[in-house]
Image: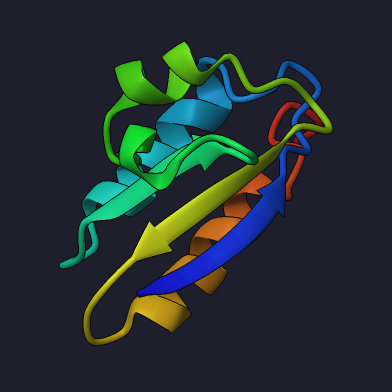
Length: 92
């Protein structure tokens, strides 16, 4: 299983626009990707392609989340998703 941490960069946290951008990218993958706040048990991780799950995390700017995926291309996919989370989409 591949795992990456990411620090939420968007000023409003993982809410509305940033969550929609991230969920769409995660949903386009042929992998199941999960997301959880750092320190949460892996079994409590949520579906990263679900905008409702993302918004229910309540992740604010500066919070660290953990992404996990398994399968062919998981490392590259997680690297791409980390870039999305570590970009302030509200500044664009």
